[in-house]
Length: 382
Image (cartoon, rainbow, N blue to C red):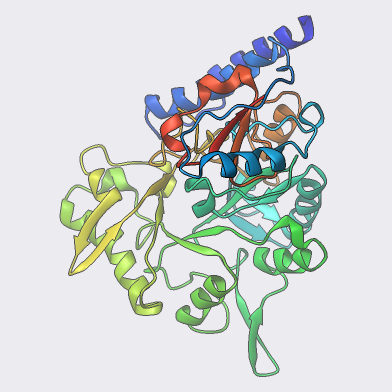
């Protein structure tokens, strides 16, 4: 108990001083802070004991459906697996990837290919499994029991993240890119998952610089199951945008270019450049119409600095999704390495029960579940 209380005090001190980013609002900061603190605080109250399974939703499937779902859930040992599907999910934010550091660029936002390879193996060994951002937003999380969902996001469309190269007259992924490394890892670890969202600035011609046209580059990612998100046309700092017309040009203009490169593809989410939002024109980040091109984002990514609440959590806000910064050449407080160490000491993170049709939580955490967000799924308390 004394050890847990000490851990709680350390978390509160750190979160109060350094695990937030002043580029987003105090409401969003407090949401992330409180989520982390509340989860660690629950540790001092002990683990929930095994009890009867109950349904907390009025699923239309009736008794037969509930019975089948309960039987599937009963196949796991709750005391061993300890599922917590209202726990936090790390949405990781990557930027630059390079072969080795040459003394230029931001060390905190730059990852070497070799370190990225090691990271994938480390995450796999820790039972993390990749899911798409869309599946997270829709609470369509289907991973094995005891595994932990994670979402990868990539900002700015750098060549180190992804590029194509011509080989024997055919365009193939550059093996020395994040996507190339992920594809290679997926060959031997297919259960890890192969997904991520790339936030692009299509007005920047160096986006995914390499062989092939912009259309071919984007289509390659989409065909592989990756998602593309809006990051403005030219990576403008939104607080510096003073007119609605300029905001529409940056946000809607990026969607218009996407329509030209990949007809019919619609951005579903938006990542704030520099993590900064426009106070007076923020509604244009969500939806608008630019020269006949309509756009609407169902989610907005922040820059920092904590794991995101579960999509069934009372604290989850898709229009303010916090992200964890990937560990760079220089480690910083609250980066991915920091959080991997922190969450391993508690029960704050999302742990799957292995059943995509249910939401399993310890009884002590039931109050964290927003019943309206279950969408017909059965709530299991234990």
